[in-house]
Length: 557
Image 1 (spheres, rainbow, N blue to C red):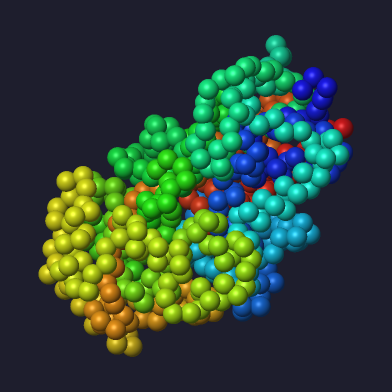
Image 2 (tube, rainbow, N blue to C red):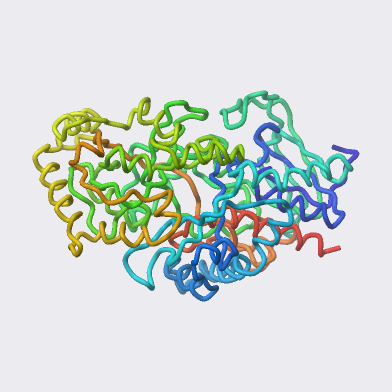
């Protein structure tokens, strides 16, 4: 690398790193991108994502008759974030307001100009279902990228690849940063670390950590874009918010590859960065073990519609408003309060066909490959999408039966942690009581009210929410139970930054030469989401903060 003197070093070749690199190259700045994995992992965790994006008052929303405004989105964000009055939330709140403005006025055009498109049907994720001033999206805002996560990566990777061909950008893969180079005055002037042995492992597969050499590289600016901690279960448990969420789960499965290890948080802190909100996390309650794993403890999240009956490990129905797709962290607290780290969905074949989507680009080949014919066949024809049916057939968390007694017998075989056997008569009585409400034009079942409200959305009525029916009606069978596990995913806290993505130190002033973007920075400010997140906001946070970092460094001259 001695023949290349970059204007900036970017640590991490995920989405935030690609965006920062793209913006720097647009301004004619030279960039060196380091990553501990090989080139096959370019784009990082974003590649595996469903590609959901949070837009406000978009053309897609307006075409569907969804009335959304910047004011309503900001109300929802604040109600979810529950920002505190401490200085740990000062910059997160500023980032949040700037991000909602970006999502309303610039974000869609910015991505559209790069070639990104969304499917026309807008989804409704994290519905809340409790309080207008509390958590959740008041309207559908989940815009699914046509091409899912790989397409989000592509629109930035292609211009970066062009800059690489022109000599503005260089990549140094298998370069693991072990420390930041800091001058006596506190200015960050470079990175040092270990060159790992070459790896030809496919994307996502855990690679060797054997060291082949050392390096030290310098530049006027260093941007940390190394992601979160979800692949490091020890660190997840160490920073778990016990007071808010209860004890950490004994059984965790990973929604991210093993290289999402959180190492750069401590490394940045040692160089003067302030890390805040360490115990704020966004892990999912609806994780299932992948029957066809890529990385260790590979998990997939079910993205559910609202109809499945949700039971805790003891067989108790979770109380309102802990319904599928409503309030992830509130439901997490309810589950862990039982003393067990799993729960159950109970549903029918009619529900799984309409309401089960699986998170991940590889679990949605029709959208990922942008094949309209396959999309129409998979989503609108009889039967569940092929990836869902494969999980139903092969997944270790699924039980399928024609009677309640057989269903419960299968569920009891999957119990763990000393949970008591479930009672078939109790579950049948619960299902019968629920079914008695279906024919009632009024009723008192809050979940059925939620289903009725959801079907007012065109997307939900056509492709996402099953028509209300009796679960004990054999015409809608068989019965299905799914054991739901805690799946690690996102880190909501991180390195505190100002609105230019400059890293802030303990005294609140910028650490000269150091920037951070993406998940390692809590997606901006050390916690743009506060305590709780709205879906479709994670990729956008990488884009927004990476863009801010690249533009700020380029503006330095």
